[in-house]
Length: 97
Image 1 (cartoon, rainbow, N blue to C red):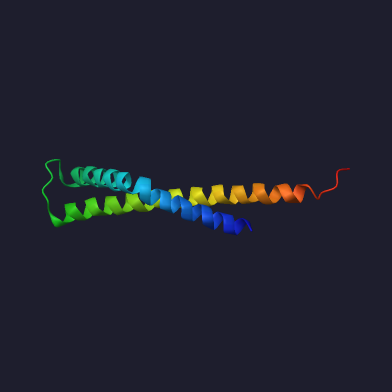
Image 2: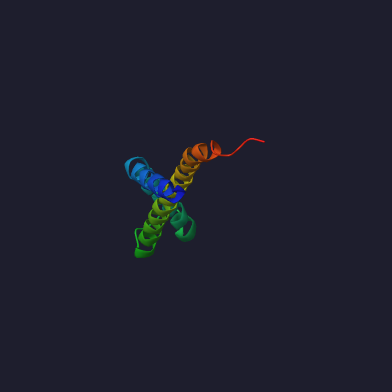
């Protein structure tokens, strides 16, 4: 039963990421790619294929890492809710000595 709550929590968190976190992840990942390209190729960045590839790599890495963070935290919170809901009914059946 906890697995179901975890999957629901991960789904809700992924939808929340798409609504709230996608644009900032793209922006900050692109900024990290620009900083990386500036460090490797020099600060007046010329728009070559390698520079553009580094910027896109930074954007993809930013989106992937933030989406996985949202999903894992949502699954953990969903599992915790499942344990709390399931734990209340199980604790009432345990005899107190």
